Length: 312
Ligand code: TXD
Image (cartoon, rainbow, N blue to C red; front, side):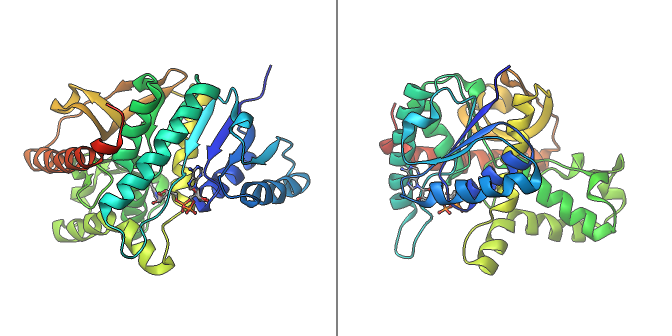
């Protein structure tokens, strides 16, 4: 028996939270990598020192050397810059695309069999960059957006009705932008269609909040969410490591599904030991289909804008 090895590329707010969750959930040994000296080492040591209290005894190593990620089973990427005042979307695309190409080079070299989960924004373009620059099979490169966006939808519906979040199931499809598609026709509360429980105008307001939930946090925190994106990525990692065959909404490379070819789009996928083992196609209402098409067209624009920074 050998322990799983989880490489976290980026030791910022999400990276640190990921390391914490991996330790608490005993997912395996954790390597926390960052280009900033001291940051991953400090966070790793802090978490290691909590081990005796919580009873986890995995290795947690902070590093600035890619040598340490050798043979990782799972790699979760949060490395990158957030948009700063005065920076255009193109500037951010250029900077983070270059970082993705750099990360991909090291992954190919040191962790060629890893299941890779990309979190860095702009998500749809960054997961494309990692796929192209690693050349890994599509089953092993996936983007995290839908698990979080769907969790937000579930949380808001549960709050509205005063029911447990566990009673609410929901999915959000499309790109990780303000035009993501909360799929009302598949949202259920204890198996009951949500439309029979909440009036259309309230549902409209809740879905608007879901689409802008990232911005709502940024307005409060002055930086982006980190607890919830980390939980979402860890659920995906666990599904892979435990061969759970769990159906989760993730950004997956579509090759004909949903009428889309060659783009990463948020859709329900089955994650198990083979990675993204299957894309699940669901029937949508005409309005949902149109909303998904619009979201996909924005993903296409984003990827085309990033294309000049990405490998062919
Ligand atoms: O759901 C989602 N996909 C998201 C995505 C939800 C919220 C935030 N999302 C995005 O995740 C966010 O817009 C960022 O692009 C990433 C990471 O967010 P985080 O809050 O963790 O950002 P930080 O704290 O700035 O951390 C980024 C780290 C930081 O420590 C840098 O030093 C490091 O990335 N960094 C690098 N690490 C490795 N290699 C390189 N080249 C590098 N460059 C910067």
